[in-house]
Image (cartoon, rainbow, N blue to C red; front, side):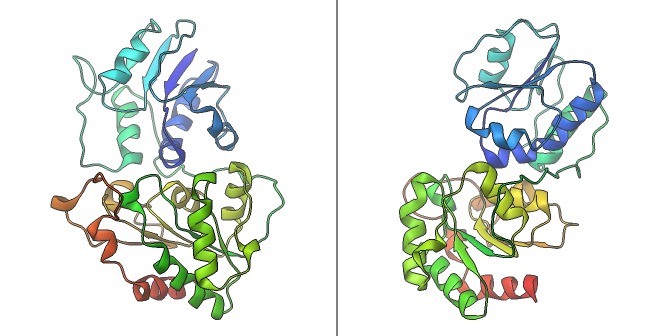
Length: 298
């Protein structure tokens, strides 16, 4: 059994897809077990090749049968290393230590995990980001505005999202606003301020959200999980970056249907505590977003 640890969120899972596919190809006869949050199971099913999801909550302790190989796709350690070593694997592939490659904070997240596997002799394809499209019945051709993000520093002000939604709606876009259960209030505020009908905030499961993005005309969001789903499906997108550089977390530069806006620098990079958006995110204007949105859908 191959045990892989990636106990993070949607965007983290999406950026780990090429590495997971490389492991599947390298060990076709082994059971591939992914330790990840259970709520991600519908999305993990769209990757293909994962035989078992081991539901975990972050780096909380768990126990499995001793794997032949444990692969740390979670982080640089040491906590994640120790968690996997407690499973008594025959081998551990991870950054650092006496055997593994050196961790770099200056490489793209997709490339990082592919490099880890390449160090151990596994062939990878960093462009293998695609996901299967769920069969959930969803509207096609909508423009999605997604104002939420896990970190407050990655949330562009909702009134600016509303201004974008209002202008695109006036230009003929069928605009809907998405958000998690915790983001329903901000999504409803964007809908109200934009003058959209209340039904523009749909109830979506993770599977139906993926289907909605796969069939969308355009996605506008911050640097959060849904932007990685747009990359996976080739859906035109405009992503607003604040604390992180798109060179580390953005779409591959050769995918021209995905546009990014970032006014930060390496010296300003990094999430900041508190309730306010990152200063680089606040420098992004409504007109900038609208101009790129029009270019992507013209």
